[in-house]
Image (cartoon, rainbow, N blue to C red):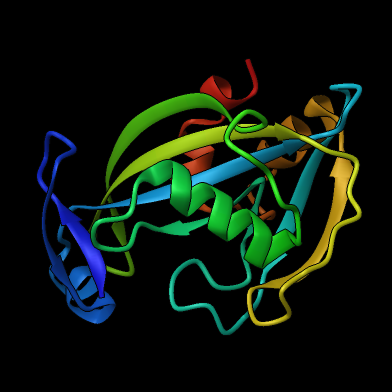
Length: 167
């Protein structure tokens, strides 16, 4: 079960993940941009080919959907620990942006409120093998170069807000 949100970004219900994706229900996700301690590099990863949404695509946010009754900040901390093995307390997690994405994915509507955070860390990074296939550090410029390449698949919701995330 995941939290269902309204268009304005308030939690209103819950539903199973398949229903949320099939019916294009508004939901929320929290993602964490991992920036090196010196601020010069971002951790980028490729999602596994078995992910339900955006399989095999690249991303610079570690994250996932918000569970019923869970705050986006708690989701961000949980997903960061699960996916990359980084434990961050509330003081280390800095809010970056909040945005709504109302798009299409495989012919169906995908509606999501994104709560983005940043944490500073040089690792170590430990991938959750079910979610992360590979990862590496890039500068902002290297990431932007790859984002401009149409042959380089990047998750569309993060990509849409990249300028707000890299400020």
